[in-house]
Image (tube, rainbow, N blue to C red; front, side, top):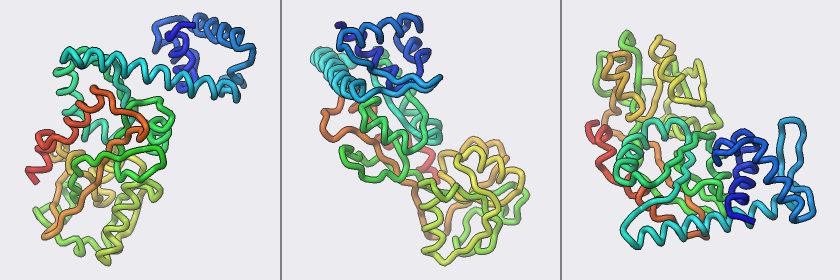
Length: 301
């Protein structure tokens, strides 16, 4: 049994898709099916449950997946350690994060990383927060990056520089003439909020409650892009990470206001498995995320 076969099996379990497993391994779907049949014949037991398009590992399949993932992770670490001994960072790095972090918080670090370490195959997947935690715990990815990180058994949180929060409004809004604003002055304003179940939604609601501010929530969304578009057309004001609105502020479609005498932040953290050593490539990526140079936009505020 070759290590490539174990990788195909793990990719299939993680993606729940024969086509995705085929793409990840540069083979055909029929080749994926053949390798799975070979594994089931070797272990003399079904490894997958197929219900239409749904694919789930059997109990035996889950045992094989966990063991195979450990073998593949150790193999990747061995390759990385051997090459890093020659001062060359290479191999693969799998990162899972939420959309807004990948687009705004990580973009500069990703570009710099790919230039410095061209022999590392960097793959970044965008997922909902719960999925990021799940993929880190299962070993499907080497690194996760989330907002408002919460402790989870089996995971270590590495703090990253926080992103400053700012108030935004449309250029036609009465508040647009100001550069700063007392948080209490937005009491009663129409407000475009993050959904209550999101980390940002809970954190911003807590900031408002702690300062005795009651806004009129007119819309709730689960992503920054939709919030920005809603504020642009005058639906209401909002509070978002500073880095996420630099392009719109420069274009004049949004106005940002700093909070007078106060600073509020969206915390960030990198997630790694607590029982595994951090791969050299992952360590270099974390170091870039921690570097103050990629926080230039925040420093300007």
